[in-house]
Length: 92
Picture 1 (cartoon, rainbow, N blue to C red):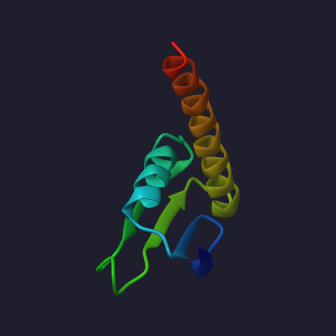
Picture 2: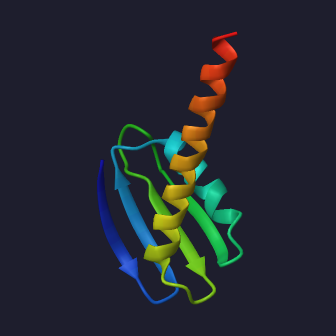
C-alpha cells in the first residue's frame, strides 16, 4: 500500500491509496461518516484494475490527517474485537 496526498487544505483532503480496493475504502468511509467532524467522506475508483482509489474528506475544520488516523485506529479496534469474539465462538 502506498499513500499519496493529492490535495490538502485545513478541512479537505484527497488521498490516493495505491494497492487497495473497495474492501478497505468502504470500511474507512463508513467509519469516517460516523464521525461528527466529517461533512463528506467518499471515494472514487474508476476501475479496479487500472486506477487507484482516491479518498475525499471534508471536515468541520479539524485537520483531515488527524481524522483519518483516528478512523484507522477505530478500524483496528473493531477488527481486534471481532477476532476476540470470533475466537470465543469457535472455541465452543
